[in-house]
Image 1 (tube, rainbow, N blue to C red):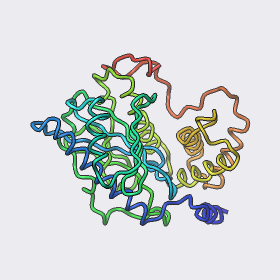
Image 2: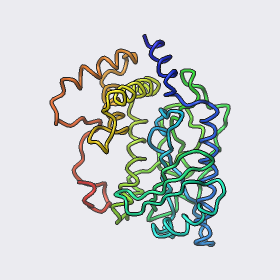
Image 3: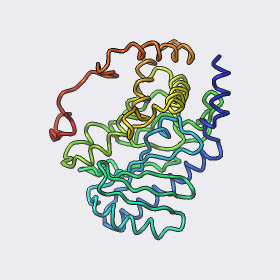
Length: 305
């Protein structure tokens, strides 16, 4: 049954192609270089780089062929949101690789939307109050490519992250990621006074939590692809229309994966529908214990409530 389901998911183009996946990696590397050069132009004496961190379906490794890339530009203290929506927009507009450029600074989570070499990107902004950790970032392709193994015959699924030198972040226990991904910790939230910045960081933080909490990452990805397609087919996939979006479905699938760590994908799907078909809504679905106050040293902003 699992093999039959996988063939059907591939027939519906719900798995990225290896060629397209490597195009995505190349675009992310090019964009990160562009961002670092732009940041340096604003403060030539600064040694801090810009960390480009992916999240959403690409970070979770469940992107389809035509999926966009959600990414966060984590910038050093000298870069402002005003710079992001003025000088960076000009830099992107002057770049021949960039098309369909649409900055949306007034959005609830401000974003710059564009295509780069044909890959659709939604780029968010955040800056650290202390940019020290941005000084020693390895290159995006710093890992040994020989260590990047195929996962269940699907080499297009990014998985874990790498710990930067002299950092207190931890390395996850999954397969090596083919590109470096900066890990946001509670320490990085200290000094933030901008709710939009906190909201912009949330996507990355949720992706980190999901990747580190599920017991079997291949099974999680398999089931999430199938459940998301089921939701689309039944017209239930849309935050805009009042239904659940991608991250919501991912949290539900992660909950089932944690509850039944030894189950096969097909059994996990059966448990998914059995569990949430009889769930006592609006009882919340929790992956971790609820914390009612922000981390130590972090401003008590309304977004934390």
